[in-house]
Image 1 (cartoon, one colour):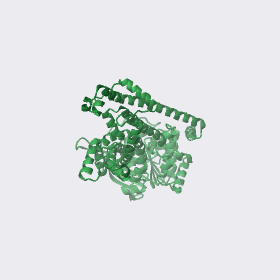
Image 2: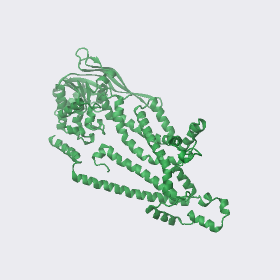
Image 3: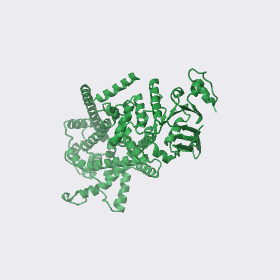
Image 4: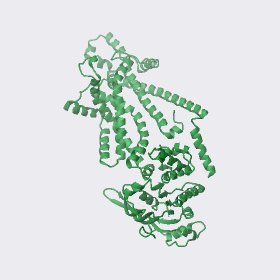
Length: 269
Length: 358
């Protein structure tokens, strides 16, 4: 596994642990650590998929990189972006411009604001408007789409609007958090091919998904997440051939894929 | 994919073409006509019910208008004939049902009768009182709405901070304080102890009407207005705060932050927008509360407005005036709620695009 020192991927996450303090009855405190010792890299021009079951902490990882964890979350460990440490201040300066998030669904759009306004993000200069129009056009959305409100968008359209929102500026790291659930297979594949294209243009794409099959088809590298930690990060081909998978969980995932050995029941930790 | 796309494209087209489409326009007008008719019928039923309830409550009241307005001693010195005349003047000899029928007949032809206490047409008494009350209640309504909205959004956006705790604490304390008690408190502090503001009435005592200026009226309206605003504010404030908390925890606020919006920009651009709608509804629905509050507050400040007239009419057995005020207040409250309904349809894009209510 590569670290920030010897290769310097665009985004390097090292030994990331996220803890939540919960206050129970009285003064009793409970500590939850949904993410433990996560080490992960996402490189320029590559599409890295983080695959895991729901509840394994994938979205938290995305939120940690974007700096949008709830206020009671405690983040331990190191993150690097483009060689420099990625702390809260730097995240705040970079997000939206160099780091972009493609969220899960239409509920991430303000229901009372039309698409154009949301993409402009408060900047109503002609330059910004032109950028928004261009971003929407890129995904086949006409100028008219800008006047629509989120409730008027179909599922596929909403997904393309969210994708367009990420590429209004030219981000170097794009984090797509579960961009495919609820979409028909054809549409889902198209969404992934759009992401693929972004990575071919030089951006680092971090795809967060529970769909291993789709990820294995489109991503370059796959990081397998299990119970709050990345158990291994391998080339995507490993999930085509089954070779090079060392962790039993990833082997079980491989076996459960259509056309492979079948489902192997795993014991919990 | 292609088929799906074309489907979604056509729904969008019909949504946009809605305004151009003549047939749909016509149905829209028919629908809004139907809406107004339904609301009108409902208002008539409401006024009928409210006036009947008020009338029969008064007829059950233990207050004897003769004893109250003429006095036991005066009554004792009168002949039976005089007393009978007085009884018929105060309507004490007509059975309630008959009395209500007579009032209703008059009301339907636009005549609300003559005030028994003021000996003038009810409409002219109400007009005069309303003039005093209207700008007091309107100012209180606007102030409580604006103040509640501003402080509520602030507290909600800054949840858990010192500012939030102070604002929310004050709002809870105020909402637990009866309006009349607040009025007494304000009076004892600002009028009695500090002596800054007059103790009551709407104009200085003993001043000729032509000498009374706007300044005098304003100074006299400060305390009642403040009291009404303060007692109406917590309701709106707490609801707005709650809504703001919801909005600030929503996914779209998280996404706005992920796109680099500052906390302030998020609160202004997304918070205010999403809180404004429920706040608007609440504001128009609060007309009733302000009117209700004004009855007590005007009484404490001896402010000669509609609220005080309602109390006088109720205690003095002046049925025509009481019914007139009841019907007028009910109409005002109804209009407030109607405005809330209609405005929601206009302001909320989800309802506007679906045709709205009007």
